[in-house]
Image 1 (cartoon, rainbow, N blue to C red):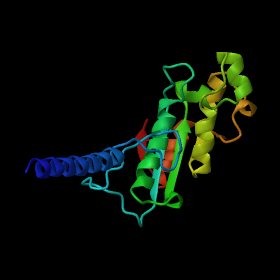
Image 2 (image 1 turned 30 degrees about the vertical axis):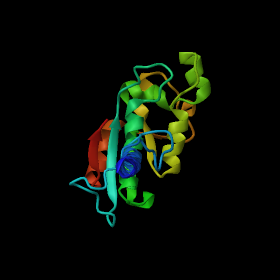
Image 3 (image 1 turned 180 degrees about the vertical axis):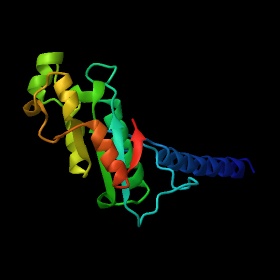
Image 4 (image 1 turned 60 degrees about the vertical axis):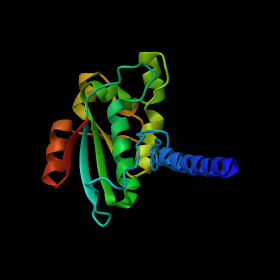
Length: 184
């Protein structure tokens, strides 16, 4: 009788471990589209889910700088999170029409490595993230007025970033084109 009880207990424990490990796997952080950035936890049973057949147009307003030296811009990281959220919900990358409009204190985030090192004595921690965003189809743009305000030359901007007239006009133009606005 004792052996049967121990056997049943062992089976119950093994079943629980299997369930627990699958629960932990579902709750683990993932970066399905922008590897290493914008980590998410998939929520396939969440109440509101993106329509996999629709295209999503979003203009992200990235104006704040990183508070931690050597860390990527938190606004750019949140753009990566948005990409990862939509992809994890089954929306293909080619149905994401995302634009990151960088200005204000975030402007230095887009400097090429040489210029960034001259100013901050470290490599630009944003360049890998910017590259991965653009590879995923995100347009990364910087305000030409913010560059001028900071005495940065257009040619100092990383090759993956487009210089525009102004964040003020960019956000208005994208709004008129039907993009939703997201403040980062």
